[in-house]
Length: 368
Image (cartoon, rainbow, N blue to C red; front, side, top):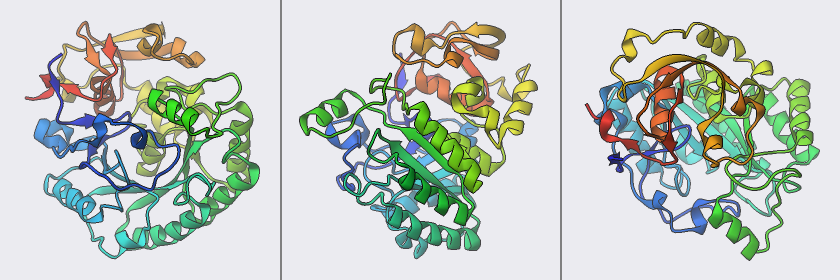
């Protein structure tokens, strides 16, 4: 593959970020335990690759450390995105002291989302405390009232027996209720390096029964039911995916097209269900505006399609949805990267049927 390796894609965002050395030393972090490529700098704006990329989601300084540990650079990226007339979501995910941002923030012509991280167990993540979340929510409220920037809670990673107790969860839901914000949540994702670190340091992190650590961020049904119950009790919208929470706040379809896996991600009880359903019902043809896409993509109806990550044994714990995907899909005979696939979903709302390889880079076919 002819890759564009100076631009970096995560599952839900395009990345802008510089090489870093400072962080909050979270015990569960994948980035701090290995010499990973993410420590490189990625400074190219999306529209420098393709002018159509002005609508894709961008996250700032998320690869290592925290965007508020490098606040001047974070604000510099916001300035650059504004100058490029970026229209898509611009996301700042932080557990830093939000007062440092408040004192320097200004009105940007950007669609900014501030996602406030919380872990809920000070022993393993001091900065991710509920107390810190409470302070940040009060500041985020003031920022919202002054500039209109939206905000939400990121409760993650939820780890078996570490931060999944009812008192911990309830304290977070009470704050979400007080500030009228949604919660995005997930379990712990563990790569090989983090797994080795957990074993080496004898950390008491265990997967939930019936699962193993890996690509999927699984939690148990019991914990899932507890979250759902608290959501109803406190009137707080909850989402398994960050992209769903951001899209809900943005009043748009989920840009990551999780509606192709409705039962796995909880679409049946999602407050944004109608918006996504209406899009999926009416997406039976490619609009002319997407005719510029590369790879010779064609639109086909699929019944019981099986996700390629499972077919190629890259995912060990598929949901039933992953084995029975139904709907209009874009297809191509050309091998793609997973980042190519993610980008296509962001731009079109369609999922993709193609042979693909797990890579954080897109191909140079996009540059025109």
